[in-house]
Length: 344
Image (cartoon, rainbow, N blue to C red; front, side):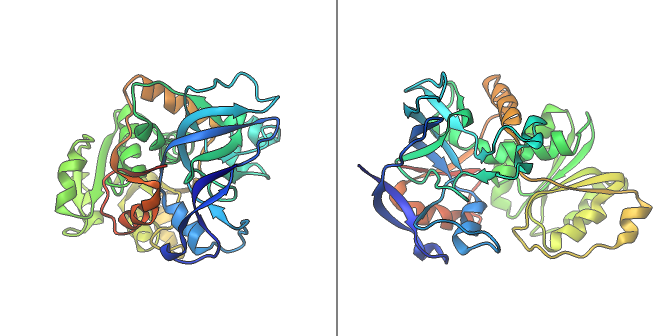
C-alpha cells in the first residue's frame, strides 16, 4: 500500500521538498501506526533539510517532529495503546533501558533519535512510532492544537524546570514570544509566578504577545533589549535568560544576567559560534546550561497541565500537506506568531 508524504531525496533548500506516494510503513511488534491528523513545523525541519554535520539519514526522508492523530494499527507487543482515540507522539525515541533513560534523561540515551530527524516523521498520512511514545489526549483541544505541543513545550519545560530549576517569582527573559518555543516558555514561567520579560521583532507582534500575559515586552527591532532589561530590573539583571537563538544574541544575553544568573541555551538559529567575556562568568558567578529536548515523563507532566487549562498551545496558521513548502517558508520569514501546522 502507498501513502502521500512530503519527501526529499537530497539535502538543500525548500525546492527539494516534493509530495509523492511512498510505501506505507511496516510496524514491528512494539510499534504502532498512527494516522496523522496534524503535524507542526519546526526549525529542526529546516536544519535537517539543509543537512547537518556528522548526521546521516536514509533517503528519501520525511520530516515532521510533532504529530497528533490516532492509532490505527499496533504490533503484537504494543500493549494497551488505544485504537482510534486522539493521541500525540513524544518525538524523542530512546531505548528505555539504559542508565539515562531510567533517570528520565531520554535525550542522553546512546540510541536516541528524534522523529522526523533521524527517522521518518509526520509530514505524511501515516507514521510508524514505538508504542511507548504514544500519549492519549482529550478532545478539549483540536488536533492542530495538540500537534503544536510536543517539541516546543517539551524543550521549554526541560530548560526552565528540569535544567534551570526555575523558582517562584524569579525574573526571566524569554526571547521571541512569537515563536512556538517562546510562547510555550512564557506560559511555563507564569506557572511559577515569575516576572516574565519577553521580546518581539515587530510592532505587529506586540498585541499577540500581550495575549500571553508577560509582564514586559521589548521590541528588539527598535530598542536594545539588553539595555531595556537592565532598566526594567533597576540594574539588577535577570535571574534566568531563555536563549534558543544563539549567535550575537548570546553575548548580549550574558550581559542581561544578574549575579548568580543562569543562561539556558537550546539552539543556534542565529549562529553556533559565540564569544564570551569570561569575566562576566566568574565575577558574577553565572551558569551556562546546555539543554536538549526532554523526556517522556516531562511530556506527561505537560499534558496534565494542558488538560487543566494552565498551558495552551498557540496556533498560527494551518496549511494542507501539499503546501508544506509554504508552511516552512512562513516560519523562515518569521511571519508566524505561534505554531504553523500542516494537515494531510
